[in-house]
Image 1 (cartoon, rainbow, N blue to C red):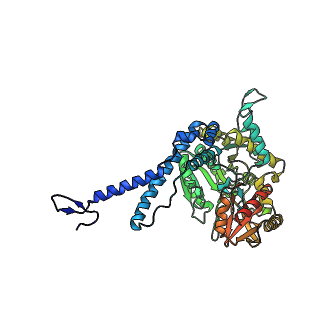
Image 2: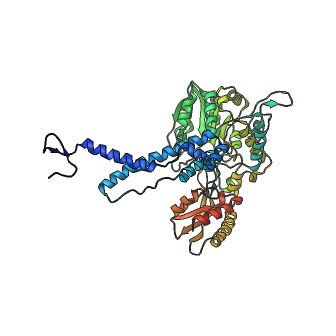
Image 3: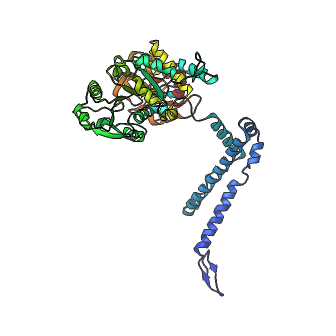
Length: 511
């Protein structure tokens, strides 16, 4: 009697078990046959191009884009099938009754994949969202939204020629920062000003121009990480200057600076701790002390203000240094961001003494760090709003200045509309006291009182609701937060004109 699956080998009556290679070969052949069964009838690229929707898309987006997308879709399906079959064969070996659960793709499905892929590509990935987090300067959501006047000025600069680097009166070449330098000087009290592409670039340029090959003295308590892994010591190293740390993490005195100054010292650096706060047993020299020391030793003080506050916001619960105050105290040079508390486009602003700014302007790095015409247009329009004394024209400042009472009235009206829109029993809706934050590496441990719309669904967890709001729908994705297992919406950062879309999105996902 022979065993099932054994093969006759050698002379008559000799038997042996099948070799391991024979089993693998049989399994591979079986896999291949199953794969072929799944792929049989799959349309070719040419067949897809003849289908009406794909053909129309090729006319609109270009044949090359559609062909590449079709090939990618087909190859992706083939890889999924191969992986599924390998996994399925293993599962069927353990449980022969299991079988496969993957459906074969139809030509219509593949057509849908191609159309969707091309549409995603042609639409682009950068798009608007509704920020219901209450974080005003949300770095991941683009920080400060621009004023309407800034958008219009950008449109004008983008759609026609401009006097970007042309002095119309003189009929000669001009300088691109002339459009913002005068406004910045007027608003900060500086003798001169310069704009580069962000504040890290401003700091890099200043240190390279003023301290390359020499030493920069800075307190250990100010060696901050700016964000996304960029750290002050690394910026210093790239500038060609040598870092000279003084003091300790929590305490630095003016005597520490004095002892650190040598013939190699070029700059005394002050960095505002804009994204964290040290409390308790601390010490830091007064800004005036540092300025006086620098003046006495013939050394410029460079202050990195970070957030770029141009007006005093203390009445609204925001305690941040104002650029004009630092310059008035005698700081020779300050730098700060354009897209944080200033409320404009991404930019790094340098303001201070004419002679120091001129040295920066002559530095070869400036060419690599300069801003384009759209940034200049947006920044100029934003600065003009400050000059007119119209801070509420700037969205970020308007959000910060909004009172808790104003937010509460909007939240109450929205909650009532949401109760009407949802089926009975679909969700519990409450108004709770909460806190908004400035964000963007500004105002650590400072909060703005607000009123939150808290939603607890009878069907979904708060995390599920939050995730559902982020999914593509009829309106822009909604970014919200979760608190105490409830979805929390903060209307401080929601534009009034977005409330209808927000209501529709929440109503849809909470049912």
